[in-house]
Length: 403
Image (tube, rainbow, N blue to C red; front, side, top):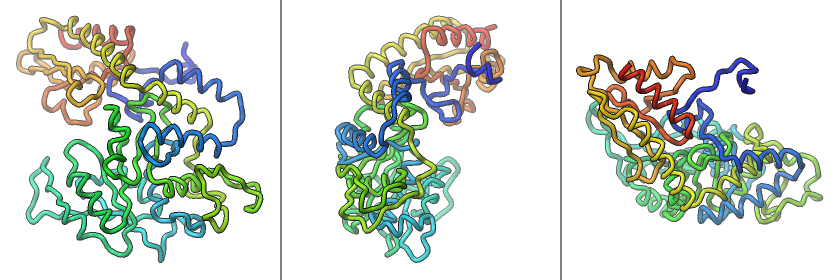
């Protein structure tokens, strides 16, 4: 009996990917062991974050960085930093932004539920890019550089940008506009790693803050993330997350590599990020995951995962009405197995196959975030597979499709 079953929860096989609702990516053994070791010792969390900043800066090419409680927490903290800067009085007011500049611009087509993380800091999210005619379903009005610039007003504190395939206008154009108006750019790159270069690409392009999930492609703890960027903004974010209660301001000696005490008029104690605190175990877990996240290690891992998907393909070889292909190499991501179901030949749809997998024991979790099931495609994401689970997936797929 697993520890989950002891409490009445049945484990699943997750081939939906590093989805939060299913616990994210499975961690490497080295990460788990490091977290266990970290749990047995006490450390000052501000010093731990200062040490983490040096690692994050090296990996991301940013001036500084902190570990956050996931990428969404990074968006909230990054927005709070853009609103408050190093003004402690403003930090203590958030999310009350009455009388304070608080508008964050974002292209309309990028605004989604994750916008709540930006609004949580007290920001007013302003969508830009209005089409001059009705846009057909499944199509997006192309937003221009001019659309972004036209929305900038005296209350604009940041431009938010979702770094996803098809996002527009190009990030380079957004950065250029932001530089002209001295406005920071916050990039949400939560699920954009791998490829490896996306750890630093957006900083190199001129973004001021970048949020990256720690529990997806990096395979760190699910409740971890990276916020990296300008040193002053990272300092503000750290101040609004860390518990600064205790010593009076005069006796307080924070790590100066992370927090510039000389630029503060007082000490914030419980900022808007207090509920987003990062444990020492999660911080160490992410740092070790980053240590192991190398070009060589990623290439080796993807080669192994392609072999596992190849074995699943072999089990399904010759099934009438089924076409298969492995994708992921072109964009540097973890490999995916796509199964194209010919409903007329098989007498069942991709939805039927997914339902059988989801409803079986153990449940094999199939997701449809990209609406591929309606096109007759079942996808098997490999990130969480191993020899045992891939064999189960192969047999269950065969039973669902050909049984």
